[in-house]
Length: 370
Image 1 (cartoon, rainbow, N blue to C red):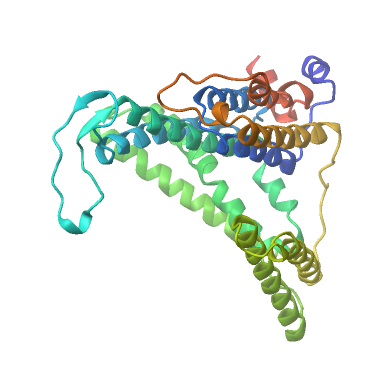
Image 2: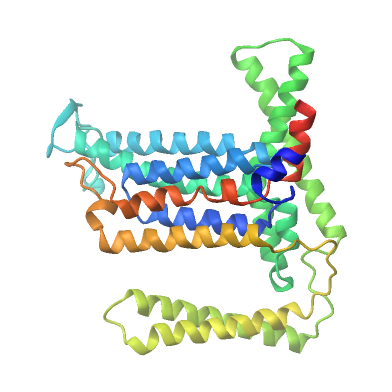
């Protein structure tokens, strides 16, 4: 245990789940602000490096492979859609497919037709951007403990937090179920190829994942998750009115901020007022949920490094997208390139791989393997 502890500069421990999610959302934000394939590949590489260095030995730590597979499928499907529905004559034609005529009510939609290099590159760039966002979400799921994440949710957001945690743990549960079913089938032998093997593998995986989800829901219900508490009817109406008013203010402020023709008084002032009312509503809603927390997660230097890294990547990515448009959104007729600042955005995300403590479960796993 001495080696990993000295390497990371701290004793082995699990990082706060909110810190990992903040870091991952920062990388996903930077990825959503560009179509440069070089920058997107750097961001995906940064997420992969951190996951390989800091994932834990728990079952959810092995779900990153599924997200990588989903990201690759997303790129292939996006390019395939460009081929099937994006036929055009403008550009360098690589494959001249016959166009399938469509009825008049489908005007504006083309089925097949000439496939140009520009259309394929555009589909590839869009697919890589979506794949980078998926991979960042997968990195957060592989690094952050979902049960500890649920324990960190404010009392007022228990219902929403429970639904989100159950939703984001689908892939980790499928990964763990697939591993256990594969190991059991390897011991039993039998059909190893064809449709028979797929049926013998898929049905137990889905059944096991469903049973674990139901067990998780039953356990949370037993512990009181999502229960409204002993609030009176008046308190519930007040809380609902505050949250509804906050949602209205935030929606109006967001619309006015995005629409340059709207009055400026409805933009940032409305957003600020909606945010203040939302905080008041959340505090009021949190008072009706009484709970204790066993061993609360600490917030130390490692968490600060992860959060600051994610925010810095998002801020620099936004700056590059607004000041270096040619770098952030390269055309399909020129070779993409990276500026020094864009290179920093792509590499900065790897800082948590060396500046955060090693998970304690990862140390145990390495000792058992040794």
